[in-house]
Amino acid sequence: MFLRSRVIAESSRHRLTCVTAPRLLVLQPSQSDPLAKLGDWLEADGMELHLVSLRDEPAPENLDGYQGVICLGGEMGALDDVEHPWLADARRLLSNAVAQRLPTLAICLGAQLLAAATGGQVRKGPQGPEVGVLLVAKRDAAGTDPLFADLPFTPDVLQFHSDEVHVLPPSAEHLAASPKYPNQAFRVGASAYGLQFHIETTPEIVLNWAAKDPDSAAYARPHHFDQDFLAEAHRDFEEVWQPFVARFAKLVRGELSPAGCLGTQLPLV
Image (cartoon, rainbow, N blue to C red; front, top):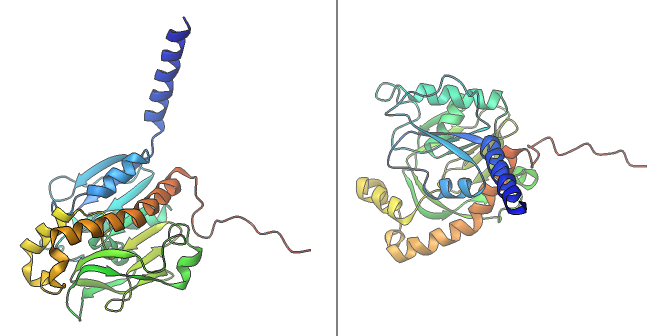
């Protein structure tokens, strides 16, 4: 009898977990940039992921039923609507996410779409592609940001982009920079984050990009596409960026306060 009651209780807890798991909308502009490690980390933190391949299926009309949004990268430009009309849907949903204060993580092209959707400006990078395993440096505002505060001052990232966020959206917080392109990470509103760089990749994904776009890949140091070098770099990425993603999951669950909502300070007496 005790064993049967325990099984029933565990089954009930499992059903409750399934019902209450936070649901994230994942917008994927290109098959060449899948969720990869980011998906593994989010699922390990109890997130339910609804992947929409924007090229192959319509984007949702609204964000009802979602507790957060992910927008991945791709080879197209953020304003290439003639060739990719669904980019307008991605910008609309990202704008809605900011307005609804939904935790949002937008990567590379996703960050450019987020910027364009909220009043920023995107352009072709005047210094050419930024490619390879490189450092970004935290800006002052990162010190009090719930996701960025605990990052190392100069974390390693994977760069592979030709466009840049030229002008940040009004009132955006500038969180990280690089010498080549300054607007590497930013936050719009309380909880929508744009990362110009990649944290989700595997060595195989990066090598595929290099093979498909050798002209851009030529901007990296040659050894940056060595299998052993990439494998070691991705171990370093995981050490830094998996905890970052875990903090994002806490933000989605309401276990971490958004920026600007860190509690009321009592007056000194």
